[in-house]
Image (cartoon, rainbow, N blue to C red; front, side, top):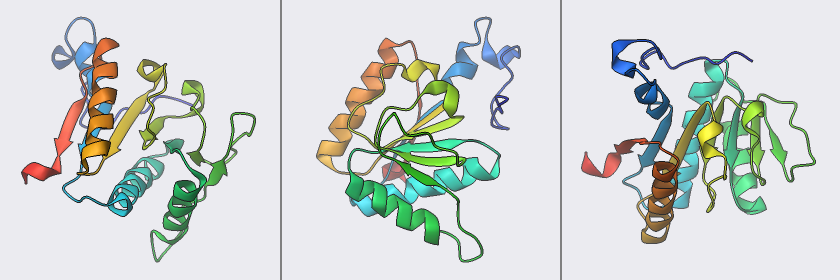
Length: 170
């Protein structure tokens, strides 16, 4: 798979990227903080991100913690658009291969398998700095926000300054 850069992301060699390409690298990592407080809003936002990346030709996965959440995401992906569904698979463990371009993972993703990784899980993969694109989605709940802060600190420790999209400020 070739690495497709989002259209608003500068080329690594452009002046905006800086000599090390660090600016480009940081623009591949996003935090989405939702104004709503429900897990359902978080799941819906994740599915919207999947739809966008999938339509751009990416292999996309959502990483979650429980089979219940995976099944909720499964239902959302099947019913997201009245005109079409997004073909996908639930991947219960790392021994299961996902042949679809979209996967709902209950295990850590392998960086080489996915173009876009959306994190809803409580833990950030140890090799998060190896993903082509990474989006973390948090809803406005104290526990989830604390978990997001922890993820943010982990990314900073890896030398990544994620872009924050805070919908609470709108």
